[in-house]
Length: 441
Image (cartoon, rainbow, N blue to C red; front, side, top):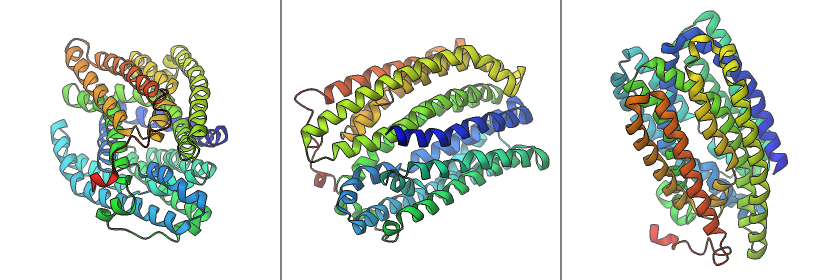
Protein backbone atom coordinates (compact mmCIF):
# COMPACT_ATOMS: atom_id res chain seq x y z
CA UNK A 1 0.00 0.00 0.00
CA UNK A 2 2.89 2.37 0.78
CA UNK A 3 4.42 1.59 -2.60
CA UNK A 4 1.15 2.20 -4.43
CA UNK A 5 0.54 5.43 -2.53
CA UNK A 6 4.06 6.50 -3.43
CA UNK A 7 3.36 5.96 -7.13
CA UNK A 8 0.14 7.95 -6.94
CA UNK A 9 1.74 10.78 -4.98
CA UNK A 10 4.72 10.95 -7.32
CA UNK A 11 2.41 11.45 -10.28
CA UNK A 12 0.34 14.03 -8.45
CA UNK A 13 3.48 15.67 -7.07
CA UNK A 14 4.43 16.72 -10.59
CA UNK A 15 0.85 17.82 -11.16
CA UNK A 16 0.83 19.89 -7.96
CA UNK A 17 3.98 21.76 -9.00
CA UNK A 18 2.77 22.39 -12.54
CA UNK A 19 -0.69 23.42 -11.33
CA UNK A 20 0.84 26.33 -9.41
CA UNK A 21 2.16 27.65 -12.71
CA UNK A 22 -0.85 27.11 -14.94
CA UNK A 23 -3.28 28.39 -12.30
CA UNK A 24 -1.09 31.49 -12.02
CA UNK A 25 -1.27 31.96 -15.79
CA UNK A 26 -5.06 31.58 -15.89
CA UNK A 27 -5.81 33.77 -12.85
CA UNK A 28 -3.50 36.59 -13.92
CA UNK A 29 -4.70 36.49 -17.54
CA UNK A 30 -8.45 36.35 -16.91
CA UNK A 31 -8.64 38.41 -13.72
CA UNK A 32 -11.01 37.64 -10.80
CA UNK A 33 -14.23 38.04 -12.82
CA UNK A 34 -13.01 36.10 -15.86
CA UNK A 35 -11.52 33.40 -13.69
CA UNK A 36 -14.84 33.21 -11.86
CA UNK A 37 -16.64 32.39 -15.12
CA UNK A 38 -13.92 29.83 -15.95
CA UNK A 39 -14.38 28.30 -12.49
CA UNK A 40 -18.15 28.11 -12.89
CA UNK A 41 -17.83 26.28 -16.22
CA UNK A 42 -15.44 23.74 -14.71
CA UNK A 43 -17.71 23.33 -11.70
CA UNK A 44 -20.87 22.73 -13.73
CA UNK A 45 -19.12 20.24 -16.02
CA UNK A 46 -17.60 18.33 -13.12
CA UNK A 47 -20.90 18.12 -11.30
CA UNK A 48 -22.77 16.87 -14.39
CA UNK A 49 -20.18 14.14 -14.89
CA UNK A 50 -20.22 13.15 -11.25
CA UNK A 51 -24.01 13.17 -11.02
CA UNK A 52 -24.64 11.23 -14.23
CA UNK A 53 -21.75 8.74 -14.35
CA UNK A 54 -20.46 6.15 -11.88
CA UNK A 55 -16.98 5.70 -10.47
CA UNK A 56 -16.92 2.24 -12.02
CA UNK A 57 -13.27 1.64 -11.14
CA UNK A 58 -14.42 0.89 -7.58
CA UNK A 59 -16.71 -1.84 -8.90
CA UNK A 60 -13.83 -3.34 -10.90
CA UNK A 61 -11.59 -3.41 -7.82
CA UNK A 62 -14.22 -4.72 -5.40
CA UNK A 63 -15.77 -7.40 -7.64
CA UNK A 64 -12.68 -8.27 -9.66
CA UNK A 65 -10.36 -9.57 -6.95
CA UNK A 66 -12.20 -12.90 -6.76
CA UNK A 67 -11.65 -13.54 -10.47
CA UNK A 68 -8.10 -12.18 -10.38
CA UNK A 69 -7.05 -14.59 -7.62
CA UNK A 70 -8.43 -17.55 -9.58
CA UNK A 71 -6.96 -16.35 -12.89
CA UNK A 72 -10.38 -16.18 -14.55
CA UNK A 73 -9.52 -13.65 -17.28
CA UNK A 74 -12.72 -14.34 -19.21
CA UNK A 75 -14.93 -13.41 -16.27
CA UNK A 76 -12.74 -10.41 -15.53
CA UNK A 77 -13.21 -9.28 -19.12
CA UNK A 78 -16.96 -9.66 -18.71
CA UNK A 79 -16.83 -7.55 -15.54
CA UNK A 80 -14.95 -4.83 -17.39
CA UNK A 81 -17.48 -5.11 -20.21
CA UNK A 82 -20.25 -4.59 -17.66
CA UNK A 83 -18.66 -1.48 -16.12
CA UNK A 84 -17.79 -0.08 -19.56
CA UNK A 85 -21.40 -0.62 -20.69
CA UNK A 86 -22.56 1.32 -17.64
CA UNK A 87 -20.06 4.08 -18.43
CA UNK A 88 -21.29 4.36 -22.02
CA UNK A 89 -24.96 4.38 -21.03
CA UNK A 90 -24.54 7.05 -18.34
CA UNK A 91 -22.29 9.21 -20.53
CA UNK A 92 -24.87 9.10 -23.33
CA UNK A 93 -27.50 10.28 -20.87
CA UNK A 94 -25.15 13.06 -19.78
CA UNK A 95 -24.63 14.21 -23.36
CA UNK A 96 -28.38 14.67 -23.69
CA UNK A 97 -28.73 16.58 -20.43
CA UNK A 98 -25.55 18.68 -20.69
CA UNK A 99 -26.86 21.31 -23.15
CA UNK A 100 -30.06 21.74 -21.14
CA UNK A 101 -28.16 22.25 -17.89
CA UNK A 102 -25.38 24.42 -19.31
CA UNK A 103 -27.73 26.72 -21.20
CA UNK A 104 -30.18 26.83 -18.31
CA UNK A 105 -27.58 27.68 -15.65
CA UNK A 106 -25.66 29.88 -18.10
CA UNK A 107 -28.72 32.05 -18.55
CA UNK A 108 -29.16 32.14 -14.78
CA UNK A 109 -25.56 33.37 -14.35
CA UNK A 110 -25.98 35.92 -17.12
CA UNK A 111 -23.52 34.29 -19.52
CA UNK A 112 -23.41 35.22 -23.18
CA UNK A 113 -24.53 32.43 -25.57
CA UNK A 114 -20.95 31.75 -26.70
CA UNK A 115 -19.93 31.02 -23.09
CA UNK A 116 -22.87 28.63 -22.73
CA UNK A 117 -21.71 26.81 -25.87
CA UNK A 118 -18.16 26.46 -24.52
CA UNK A 119 -19.55 25.10 -21.25
CA UNK A 120 -21.52 22.48 -23.19
CA UNK A 121 -18.47 21.47 -25.23
CA UNK A 122 -16.30 21.14 -22.14
CA UNK A 123 -18.92 19.03 -20.36
CA UNK A 124 -19.25 16.77 -23.42
CA UNK A 125 -15.49 16.13 -23.47
CA UNK A 126 -15.53 15.17 -19.79
CA UNK A 127 -18.37 12.75 -20.45
CA UNK A 128 -16.78 10.95 -23.43
CA UNK A 129 -13.47 10.33 -21.64
CA UNK A 130 -14.62 6.95 -20.26
CA UNK A 131 -11.43 5.99 -18.44
CA UNK A 132 -12.85 4.81 -15.12
CA UNK A 133 -12.91 1.14 -16.20
CA UNK A 134 -9.23 0.95 -17.29
CA UNK A 135 -8.33 2.85 -14.10
CA UNK A 136 -9.94 0.07 -12.07
CA UNK A 137 -8.10 -2.60 -14.05
CA UNK A 138 -4.70 -1.01 -13.45
CA UNK A 139 -5.37 -0.63 -9.73
CA UNK A 140 -6.64 -4.17 -9.40
CA UNK A 141 -3.45 -5.41 -11.10
CA UNK A 142 -1.37 -3.26 -8.71
CA UNK A 143 -0.13 -1.18 -11.63
CA UNK A 144 -0.36 2.06 -9.69
CA UNK A 145 2.84 3.28 -11.33
CA UNK A 146 1.18 3.02 -14.73
CA UNK A 147 -1.84 4.88 -13.41
CA UNK A 148 0.40 7.62 -12.05
CA UNK A 149 2.03 7.93 -15.47
CA UNK A 150 -1.39 8.31 -17.11
CA UNK A 151 -2.44 10.94 -14.56
CA UNK A 152 0.57 13.10 -15.41
CA UNK A 153 -0.98 13.73 -18.83
CA UNK A 154 -3.41 16.19 -17.24
CA UNK A 155 -0.96 18.68 -15.67
CA UNK A 156 1.58 18.40 -18.48
CA UNK A 157 -0.97 19.06 -21.23
CA UNK A 158 -2.61 21.82 -19.21
CA UNK A 159 0.74 23.50 -18.65
CA UNK A 160 1.61 23.34 -22.34
CA UNK A 161 -1.91 24.36 -23.30
CA UNK A 162 -1.90 27.32 -20.90
CA UNK A 163 1.35 28.59 -22.44
CA UNK A 164 0.00 28.15 -25.96
CA UNK A 165 -3.26 29.86 -25.03
CA UNK A 166 -1.36 32.71 -23.40
CA UNK A 167 0.60 33.24 -26.61
CA UNK A 168 -2.12 32.68 -29.20
CA UNK A 169 -5.57 32.98 -27.57
CA UNK A 170 -5.32 34.52 -24.08
CA UNK A 171 -8.99 34.20 -23.27
CA UNK A 172 -11.61 31.89 -21.83
CA UNK A 173 -11.89 29.79 -25.00
CA UNK A 174 -8.13 29.19 -25.28
CA UNK A 175 -7.82 27.88 -21.73
CA UNK A 176 -10.94 25.71 -22.03
CA UNK A 177 -9.51 24.08 -25.16
CA UNK A 178 -6.31 23.29 -23.24
CA UNK A 179 -8.32 21.71 -20.41
CA UNK A 180 -10.39 19.67 -22.90
CA UNK A 181 -7.30 18.32 -24.63
CA UNK A 182 -5.85 17.27 -21.27
CA UNK A 183 -8.99 15.22 -20.49
CA UNK A 184 -8.78 13.41 -23.84
CA UNK A 185 -5.06 12.72 -23.37
CA UNK A 186 -5.50 11.13 -19.94
CA UNK A 187 -8.26 8.89 -21.33
CA UNK A 188 -6.04 7.71 -24.18
CA UNK A 189 -3.16 7.13 -21.76
CA UNK A 190 -5.26 5.01 -19.39
CA UNK A 191 -6.62 2.78 -22.16
CA UNK A 192 -3.16 2.36 -23.73
CA UNK A 193 -1.61 1.32 -20.41
CA UNK A 194 -4.54 -0.97 -19.59
CA UNK A 195 -3.92 -2.73 -22.91
CA UNK A 196 -0.18 -2.93 -22.24
CA UNK A 197 -0.48 -4.53 -18.80
CA UNK A 198 -3.81 -6.31 -19.08
CA UNK A 199 -4.36 -7.16 -22.72
CA UNK A 200 -5.25 -10.75 -21.72
CA UNK A 201 -8.21 -9.21 -19.85
CA UNK A 202 -9.01 -6.24 -22.09
CA UNK A 203 -9.19 -8.61 -25.06
CA UNK A 204 -12.11 -10.37 -23.35
CA UNK A 205 -14.19 -7.20 -22.93
CA UNK A 206 -17.66 -7.53 -24.40
CA UNK A 207 -20.35 -4.91 -23.97
CA UNK A 208 -23.34 -6.16 -21.98
CA UNK A 209 -26.96 -5.06 -21.88
CA UNK A 210 -26.97 -2.83 -18.77
CA UNK A 211 -30.30 -4.29 -17.67
CA UNK A 212 -28.81 -7.80 -17.44
CA UNK A 213 -25.77 -6.78 -15.40
CA UNK A 214 -27.62 -7.26 -12.11
CA UNK A 215 -28.20 -10.92 -12.99
CA UNK A 216 -24.61 -11.60 -14.12
CA UNK A 217 -22.94 -9.67 -11.30
CA UNK A 218 -25.31 -9.57 -8.31
CA UNK A 219 -24.73 -6.54 -6.15
CA UNK A 220 -22.73 -4.53 -8.71
CA UNK A 221 -25.52 -2.10 -9.55
CA UNK A 222 -26.36 -1.60 -5.88
CA UNK A 223 -22.73 -0.95 -4.99
CA UNK A 224 -22.24 1.53 -7.85
CA UNK A 225 -25.46 3.37 -7.07
CA UNK A 226 -24.54 3.78 -3.40
CA UNK A 227 -21.00 4.77 -4.31
CA UNK A 228 -22.31 7.28 -6.85
CA UNK A 229 -24.61 8.89 -4.32
CA UNK A 230 -21.69 9.26 -1.92
CA UNK A 231 -19.39 10.73 -4.58
CA UNK A 232 -22.10 12.99 -6.02
CA UNK A 233 -22.91 14.45 -2.64
CA UNK A 234 -19.19 14.85 -1.88
CA UNK A 235 -18.76 16.72 -5.16
CA UNK A 236 -21.84 18.84 -4.45
CA UNK A 237 -20.45 19.73 -1.02
CA UNK A 238 -17.25 20.90 -2.72
CA UNK A 239 -18.79 22.64 -5.74
CA UNK A 240 -22.16 24.00 -4.54
CA UNK A 241 -20.57 27.05 -2.83
CA UNK A 242 -19.04 28.17 -6.15
CA UNK A 243 -22.40 27.84 -7.93
CA UNK A 244 -24.13 29.73 -5.13
CA UNK A 245 -21.58 32.53 -5.22
CA UNK A 246 -21.90 32.76 -8.99
CA UNK A 247 -25.65 33.21 -8.68
CA UNK A 248 -26.03 35.13 -5.41
CA UNK A 249 -22.89 37.28 -5.51
CA UNK A 250 -20.75 37.83 -8.61
CA UNK A 251 -18.20 36.02 -10.74
CA UNK A 252 -15.28 37.62 -8.87
CA UNK A 253 -16.47 36.16 -5.55
CA UNK A 254 -16.75 32.76 -7.23
CA UNK A 255 -13.20 33.25 -8.55
CA UNK A 256 -11.82 33.99 -5.08
CA UNK A 257 -13.56 30.96 -3.64
CA UNK A 258 -12.45 28.74 -6.52
CA UNK A 259 -8.81 29.75 -6.05
CA UNK A 260 -8.97 29.05 -2.31
CA UNK A 261 -10.79 25.79 -2.94
CA UNK A 262 -8.31 24.70 -5.58
CA UNK A 263 -5.33 25.34 -3.32
CA UNK A 264 -6.97 23.55 -0.40
CA UNK A 265 -8.14 20.75 -2.70
CA UNK A 266 -4.52 20.12 -3.56
CA UNK A 267 -4.35 18.93 0.04
CA UNK A 268 -7.50 16.82 -0.14
CA UNK A 269 -6.17 15.33 -3.36
CA UNK A 270 -3.52 13.71 -1.19
CA UNK A 271 -6.26 12.04 0.84
CA UNK A 272 -8.06 10.94 -2.34
CA UNK A 273 -4.89 9.32 -3.65
CA UNK A 274 -4.17 7.56 -0.38
CA UNK A 275 -7.82 6.50 -0.25
CA UNK A 276 -7.50 4.72 -3.61
CA UNK A 277 -4.51 2.68 -2.46
CA UNK A 278 -6.11 1.97 0.92
CA UNK A 279 -9.40 0.89 -0.65
CA UNK A 280 -7.62 -1.56 -2.94
CA UNK A 281 -5.89 -3.22 0.01
CA UNK A 282 -8.97 -3.22 2.21
CA UNK A 283 -11.09 -4.72 -0.57
CA UNK A 284 -8.47 -7.45 -1.01
CA UNK A 285 -8.40 -8.17 2.72
CA UNK A 286 -12.19 -8.18 3.01
CA UNK A 287 -12.39 -10.67 0.12
CA UNK A 288 -10.30 -13.17 2.06
CA UNK A 289 -12.03 -16.46 2.82
CA UNK A 290 -10.51 -16.37 6.33
CA UNK A 291 -12.88 -13.94 8.05
CA UNK A 292 -10.81 -13.79 11.25
CA UNK A 293 -7.70 -12.90 9.23
CA UNK A 294 -9.75 -10.34 7.31
CA UNK A 295 -10.92 -8.69 10.53
CA UNK A 296 -7.41 -8.42 11.94
CA UNK A 297 -6.00 -7.15 8.65
CA UNK A 298 -8.64 -4.44 8.27
CA UNK A 299 -8.14 -3.27 11.86
CA UNK A 300 -4.37 -3.15 11.33
CA UNK A 301 -4.70 -1.14 8.11
CA UNK A 302 -7.14 1.29 9.71
CA UNK A 303 -4.91 1.95 12.72
CA UNK A 304 -1.64 2.40 10.86
CA UNK A 305 -3.03 4.58 8.08
CA UNK A 306 -4.99 6.76 10.53
CA UNK A 307 -1.85 7.56 12.51
CA UNK A 308 0.11 8.48 9.38
CA UNK A 309 -2.78 10.52 7.98
CA UNK A 310 -3.21 12.41 11.23
CA UNK A 311 0.43 13.51 11.14
CA UNK A 312 0.04 14.59 7.51
CA UNK A 313 -3.05 16.63 8.42
CA UNK A 314 -1.14 18.51 11.12
CA UNK A 315 1.64 19.37 8.65
CA UNK A 316 -0.92 20.61 6.10
CA UNK A 317 -2.66 22.86 8.64
CA UNK A 318 0.64 24.49 9.68
CA UNK A 319 1.78 24.90 6.07
CA UNK A 320 -1.44 26.68 5.09
CA UNK A 321 -1.16 29.10 7.98
CA UNK A 322 2.47 29.96 7.23
CA UNK A 323 2.62 29.85 3.43
CA UNK A 324 -0.98 30.51 2.33
CA UNK A 325 -0.82 34.29 1.87
CA UNK A 326 2.66 34.36 0.22
CA UNK A 327 1.52 31.63 -2.17
CA UNK A 328 -1.56 33.59 -3.28
CA UNK A 329 0.54 36.75 -3.76
CA UNK A 330 3.16 34.88 -5.76
CA UNK A 331 0.71 33.02 -7.95
CA UNK A 332 -2.14 35.39 -8.64
CA UNK A 333 -1.26 38.81 -7.24
CA UNK A 334 -2.64 41.17 -4.62
CA UNK A 335 -6.09 41.35 -6.23
CA UNK A 336 -6.71 37.76 -5.11
CA UNK A 337 -5.84 38.37 -1.41
CA UNK A 338 -9.55 38.19 -0.42
CA UNK A 339 -9.14 34.45 -1.03
CA UNK A 340 -6.72 34.03 1.93
CA UNK A 341 -9.29 33.83 4.79
CA UNK A 342 -11.27 31.40 2.66
CA UNK A 343 -8.12 29.35 2.11
CA UNK A 344 -7.54 29.03 5.86
CA UNK A 345 -11.04 27.74 6.57
CA UNK A 346 -11.22 25.44 3.55
CA UNK A 347 -7.67 24.27 4.30
CA UNK A 348 -8.70 23.24 7.81
CA UNK A 349 -11.57 21.25 6.29
CA UNK A 350 -9.11 19.69 3.84
CA UNK A 351 -6.74 18.76 6.67
CA UNK A 352 -9.61 16.98 8.46
CA UNK A 353 -10.35 15.02 5.27
CA UNK A 354 -6.72 13.97 5.06
CA UNK A 355 -6.71 12.93 8.72
CA UNK A 356 -9.75 10.71 8.17
CA UNK A 357 -8.50 9.19 4.91
CA UNK A 358 -8.92 5.58 6.09
CA UNK A 359 -12.57 5.84 7.05
CA UNK A 360 -14.28 5.85 3.65
CA UNK A 361 -12.22 2.95 2.21
CA UNK A 362 -13.01 0.92 5.33
CA UNK A 363 -16.75 1.52 4.98
CA UNK A 364 -16.77 0.85 1.22
CA UNK A 365 -14.70 -2.34 1.55
CA UNK A 366 -17.06 -3.69 4.22
CA UNK A 367 -20.23 -2.96 2.23
CA UNK A 368 -21.28 0.11 4.21
CA UNK A 369 -21.62 2.32 1.14
CA UNK A 370 -25.31 3.06 1.76
CA UNK A 371 -24.65 4.21 5.32
CA UNK A 372 -21.77 6.35 4.07
CA UNK A 373 -24.06 7.92 1.48
CA UNK A 374 -26.54 8.77 4.26
CA UNK A 375 -23.80 10.52 6.19
CA UNK A 376 -22.83 12.54 3.11
CA UNK A 377 -26.45 13.59 2.57
CA UNK A 378 -26.67 14.73 6.19
CA UNK A 379 -23.42 16.65 5.73
CA UNK A 380 -24.79 18.39 2.64
CA UNK A 381 -27.96 19.35 4.52
CA UNK A 382 -25.93 20.80 7.40
CA UNK A 383 -23.75 22.78 5.00
CA UNK A 384 -26.74 24.22 3.12
CA UNK A 385 -28.47 25.22 6.36
CA UNK A 386 -25.27 26.91 7.51
CA UNK A 387 -24.99 28.80 4.23
CA UNK A 388 -28.61 29.92 4.44
CA UNK A 389 -28.01 31.28 7.94
CA UNK A 390 -24.61 32.91 7.41
CA UNK A 391 -24.41 34.05 3.77
CA UNK A 392 -26.42 37.26 4.11
CA UNK A 393 -24.18 38.68 6.83
CA UNK A 394 -20.83 37.06 6.04
CA UNK A 395 -20.88 36.24 2.31
CA UNK A 396 -18.14 33.87 1.06
CA UNK A 397 -16.63 33.66 4.55
CA UNK A 398 -19.92 32.33 5.90
CA UNK A 399 -19.91 29.67 3.20
CA UNK A 400 -16.37 28.61 4.12
CA UNK A 401 -17.34 28.38 7.81
CA UNK A 402 -20.35 26.25 6.85
CA UNK A 403 -18.07 23.89 4.91
CA UNK A 404 -15.71 23.55 7.88
CA UNK A 405 -18.50 22.86 10.37
CA UNK A 406 -20.18 20.31 8.10
CA UNK A 407 -16.81 18.59 7.59
CA UNK A 408 -16.37 18.24 11.35
CA UNK A 409 -19.87 16.78 11.74
CA UNK A 410 -19.24 14.37 8.85
CA UNK A 411 -15.99 13.19 10.44
CA UNK A 412 -17.78 12.44 13.73
CA UNK A 413 -20.61 10.55 12.00
CA UNK A 414 -18.24 8.50 9.82
CA UNK A 415 -16.10 7.65 12.84
CA UNK A 416 -19.21 6.35 14.62
CA UNK A 417 -19.98 4.18 11.59
CA UNK A 418 -16.47 2.73 11.64
CA UNK A 419 -16.71 1.95 15.35
CA UNK A 420 -20.02 0.18 14.77
CA UNK A 421 -18.54 -1.76 11.85
CA UNK A 422 -15.59 -2.86 13.99
CA UNK A 423 -17.77 -3.82 16.98
CA UNK A 424 -17.21 -7.39 18.26
CA UNK A 425 -20.62 -8.60 17.07
CA UNK A 426 -20.23 -7.18 13.56
CA UNK A 427 -16.61 -7.63 12.60
CA UNK A 428 -16.91 -10.74 10.53
CA UNK A 429 -20.31 -10.45 8.98
CA UNK A 430 -20.42 -7.09 7.20
CA UNK A 431 -21.16 -8.71 3.88
CA UNK A 432 -23.53 -11.27 5.37
CA UNK A 433 -25.67 -8.48 6.83
CA UNK A 434 -26.50 -7.18 3.34
CA UNK A 435 -29.94 -7.94 1.83
CA UNK A 436 -30.37 -10.58 -0.83
CA UNK A 437 -29.15 -9.11 -4.16
CA UNK A 438 -32.08 -10.75 -5.94
CA UNK A 439 -34.41 -8.43 -4.06
CA UNK A 440 -33.03 -5.57 -6.15
CA UNK A 441 -33.58 -7.21 -9.54
